[in-house]
Length: 151
Image 1 (cartoon, helix red, strand yellow):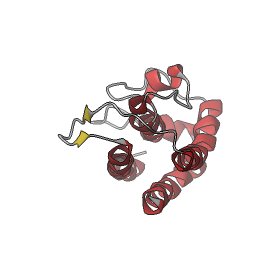
Image 2 (image 1 turned 90 degrees about the vertical axis):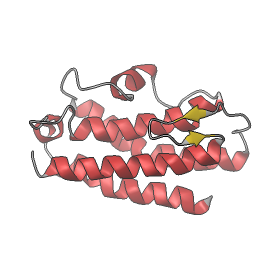
Image 3 (image 1 turned 180 degrees about the vertical axis):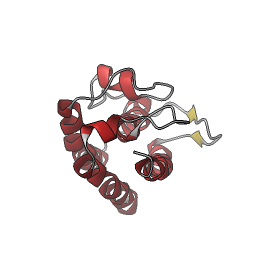
Image 4 (image 1 turned 180 degrees about the horizontal axis):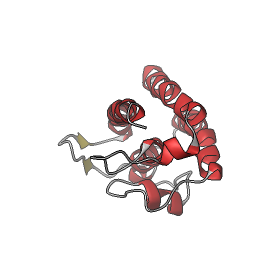
């Protein structure tokens, strides 16, 4: 499992600079032909990790329900993100990976609700969820890299 967590950190190391190198206006810009922006994609990976790993394991998520509602699958930016929201996501980006690894090590993930993903892969346990999460974050990293050229 060490590699799974390291892969998650690697993806997030590639995502994190966008929160530093792009202005708030650039993070909030929705290019023509897209339904979301750089910031939505980054916040979405943070929220999705919590839904896939904690919620499906029947555990309390480490992010607020408000954050989940704003950035879960099927949502779209309804208003511009603030600098405070950017700072919050910036702090959660790595803290949540570290906490998930610690929680996994302590054995709290003892149950799991099977979940068929939109890509057709069925998650049967928390290890599946962690592996799928890395796949999901890689997809969104690709979208982020496409968006950066348009903002």
